[in-house]
Image (cartoon, rainbow, N blue to C red; front, side, top):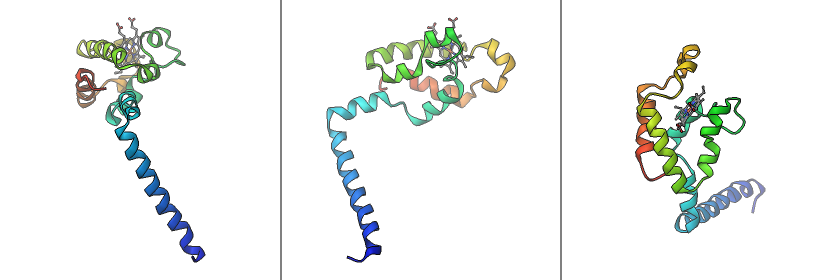
Length: 128
Ligand code: HEC
Protein backbone atom coordinates (compact mmCIF):
# COMPACT_ATOMS: atom_id res chain seq x y z
CA UNK A 1 0.00 0.00 0.00
CA UNK A 2 1.21 3.46 -0.85
CA UNK A 3 2.06 5.63 2.05
CA UNK A 4 -0.47 8.36 1.30
CA UNK A 5 -3.31 5.83 1.51
CA UNK A 6 -2.28 4.46 4.82
CA UNK A 7 -3.58 7.26 6.98
CA UNK A 8 -7.07 7.59 5.43
CA UNK A 9 -7.42 3.82 5.50
CA UNK A 10 -6.53 3.73 9.15
CA UNK A 11 -8.98 6.54 9.83
CA UNK A 12 -11.81 4.67 8.11
CA UNK A 13 -10.96 1.48 9.97
CA UNK A 14 -10.89 3.39 13.20
CA UNK A 15 -14.28 4.90 12.50
CA UNK A 16 -15.76 1.51 11.64
CA UNK A 17 -14.35 0.06 14.81
CA UNK A 18 -15.70 2.93 16.87
CA UNK A 19 -19.18 2.56 15.36
CA UNK A 20 -19.04 -1.15 16.02
CA UNK A 21 -18.20 -0.68 19.66
CA UNK A 22 -20.63 2.13 20.29
CA UNK A 23 -23.42 0.05 18.82
CA UNK A 24 -22.58 -2.76 21.15
CA UNK A 25 -22.85 -0.58 24.24
CA UNK A 26 -26.29 0.64 23.14
CA UNK A 27 -27.54 -2.91 23.58
CA UNK A 28 -25.86 -3.57 26.87
CA UNK A 29 -26.96 -2.58 30.33
CA UNK A 30 -24.05 -0.21 30.41
CA UNK A 31 -25.67 2.23 28.05
CA UNK A 32 -28.70 2.51 30.28
CA UNK A 33 -26.49 3.90 32.97
CA UNK A 34 -24.81 6.30 30.56
CA UNK A 35 -28.15 7.50 29.29
CA UNK A 36 -29.41 8.13 32.77
CA UNK A 37 -26.38 10.09 33.78
CA UNK A 38 -26.40 12.30 30.71
CA UNK A 39 -28.69 15.27 30.69
CA UNK A 40 -30.00 16.36 27.29
CA UNK A 41 -27.63 18.87 25.74
CA UNK A 42 -30.16 21.70 25.64
CA UNK A 43 -30.92 21.25 29.34
CA UNK A 44 -27.26 21.07 30.22
CA UNK A 45 -26.60 24.28 28.30
CA UNK A 46 -29.17 26.19 30.35
CA UNK A 47 -28.01 24.68 33.62
CA UNK A 48 -24.37 25.49 32.87
CA UNK A 49 -25.22 29.10 32.17
CA UNK A 50 -27.86 29.82 34.77
CA UNK A 51 -27.57 27.38 37.65
CA UNK A 52 -24.22 25.64 37.78
CA UNK A 53 -22.22 28.56 39.15
CA UNK A 54 -23.90 28.34 42.54
CA UNK A 55 -24.67 24.65 42.45
CA UNK A 56 -21.39 22.80 42.26
CA UNK A 57 -19.03 21.35 44.83
CA UNK A 58 -16.50 24.20 44.41
CA UNK A 59 -19.05 27.00 44.62
CA UNK A 60 -18.52 29.83 47.05
CA UNK A 61 -22.25 29.87 47.50
CA UNK A 62 -22.33 27.62 50.56
CA UNK A 63 -26.10 27.37 50.81
CA UNK A 64 -26.53 26.76 47.12
CA UNK A 65 -23.99 23.97 46.89
CA UNK A 66 -25.35 22.27 49.96
CA UNK A 67 -28.83 22.17 48.53
CA UNK A 68 -27.85 21.05 45.05
CA UNK A 69 -24.60 19.94 43.42
CA UNK A 70 -25.16 19.32 39.71
CA UNK A 71 -22.15 17.04 39.32
CA UNK A 72 -23.38 14.88 42.16
CA UNK A 73 -26.85 15.03 40.66
CA UNK A 74 -25.62 13.79 37.30
CA UNK A 75 -23.70 10.97 38.93
CA UNK A 76 -26.51 9.86 41.20
CA UNK A 77 -29.00 7.06 40.76
CA UNK A 78 -32.26 7.50 38.93
CA UNK A 79 -34.36 7.45 42.08
CA UNK A 80 -32.28 10.23 43.60
CA UNK A 81 -32.42 12.22 40.39
CA UNK A 82 -36.18 11.95 40.30
CA UNK A 83 -36.44 13.31 43.83
CA UNK A 84 -34.10 16.16 42.96
CA UNK A 85 -36.07 16.93 39.81
CA UNK A 86 -39.17 17.30 41.94
CA UNK A 87 -37.37 19.99 43.95
CA UNK A 88 -36.09 21.64 40.80
CA UNK A 89 -39.57 21.78 39.31
CA UNK A 90 -40.83 23.30 42.53
CA UNK A 91 -38.32 26.16 42.55
CA UNK A 92 -38.93 26.81 38.85
CA UNK A 93 -42.70 26.92 39.28
CA UNK A 94 -42.31 29.32 42.15
CA UNK A 95 -39.84 31.45 40.24
CA UNK A 96 -37.36 31.01 43.10
CA UNK A 97 -34.26 30.30 41.01
CA UNK A 98 -31.96 31.97 40.32
CA UNK A 99 -32.59 33.83 43.60
CA UNK A 100 -34.19 37.27 43.26
CA UNK A 101 -31.44 38.84 45.36
CA UNK A 102 -28.83 37.63 42.91
CA UNK A 103 -30.82 38.88 39.92
CA UNK A 104 -30.91 42.40 41.36
CA UNK A 105 -27.21 42.66 40.58
CA UNK A 106 -27.17 40.32 37.63
CA UNK A 107 -30.45 40.63 35.70
CA UNK A 108 -28.95 38.75 32.74
CA UNK A 109 -28.88 35.69 34.99
CA UNK A 110 -32.64 35.39 34.76
CA UNK A 111 -34.05 32.46 32.81
CA UNK A 112 -35.64 33.41 29.51
CA UNK A 113 -39.12 32.08 28.78
CA UNK A 114 -37.73 29.36 26.56
CA UNK A 115 -34.99 28.38 29.00
CA UNK A 116 -37.58 28.11 31.73
CA UNK A 117 -39.77 25.97 29.49
CA UNK A 118 -36.82 23.71 28.66
CA UNK A 119 -35.96 23.16 32.32
CA UNK A 120 -39.58 22.69 33.34
CA UNK A 121 -40.25 20.10 30.69
CA UNK A 122 -37.09 18.23 31.60
CA UNK A 123 -37.75 18.29 35.32
CA UNK A 124 -41.25 16.91 34.73
CA UNK A 125 -40.02 14.00 32.64
CA UNK A 126 -39.34 10.74 34.44
CA UNK A 127 -36.72 9.67 31.93
CA UNK A 128 -33.48 11.27 32.98
C1 HEC B 1 -26.74 33.02 42.76
C2 HEC B 1 -26.67 31.64 43.11
C3 HEC B 1 -27.72 30.69 42.59
C4 HEC B 1 -28.09 30.45 41.30
C5 HEC B 1 -27.60 31.14 40.04
C6 HEC B 1 -29.06 29.36 41.34
N1 HEC B 1 -29.26 28.98 42.63
FE1 HEC B 1 -30.47 27.47 43.26
N2 HEC B 1 -30.03 27.90 45.21
C7 HEC B 1 -29.19 28.92 45.62
C8 HEC B 1 -29.24 29.02 47.07
C9 HEC B 1 -28.48 30.02 47.92
C10 HEC B 1 -30.13 28.01 47.50
C11 HEC B 1 -30.56 27.72 48.93
C12 HEC B 1 -31.80 28.52 49.18
C13 HEC B 1 -32.29 28.37 50.56
O1 HEC B 1 -31.96 27.41 51.24
O2 HEC B 1 -33.07 29.24 50.96
C14 HEC B 1 -30.59 27.32 46.31
C15 HEC B 1 -31.44 26.24 46.34
C16 HEC B 1 -31.85 25.55 45.21
C17 HEC B 1 -32.63 24.34 45.24
C18 HEC B 1 -33.07 23.58 46.48
C19 HEC B 1 -34.41 24.07 46.95
C20 HEC B 1 -34.83 23.29 48.16
O3 HEC B 1 -35.64 23.83 48.91
O4 HEC B 1 -34.35 22.19 48.40
C21 HEC B 1 -32.85 23.99 43.94
C22 HEC B 1 -33.63 22.76 43.46
C23 HEC B 1 -32.22 24.98 43.10
N3 HEC B 1 -31.61 25.91 43.92
C24 HEC B 1 -32.23 24.97 41.73
C25 HEC B 1 -31.66 25.95 40.94
C26 HEC B 1 -31.79 26.01 39.51
C27 HEC B 1 -32.60 25.03 38.67
C28 HEC B 1 -31.08 27.09 39.08
C29 HEC B 1 -30.94 27.61 37.67
C30 HEC B 1 -32.14 27.96 36.99
C31 HEC B 1 -30.49 27.71 40.26
N4 HEC B 1 -30.86 26.99 41.35
C32 HEC B 1 -29.67 28.82 40.24
C33 HEC B 1 -28.40 29.70 44.81
C34 HEC B 1 -28.47 29.76 43.43
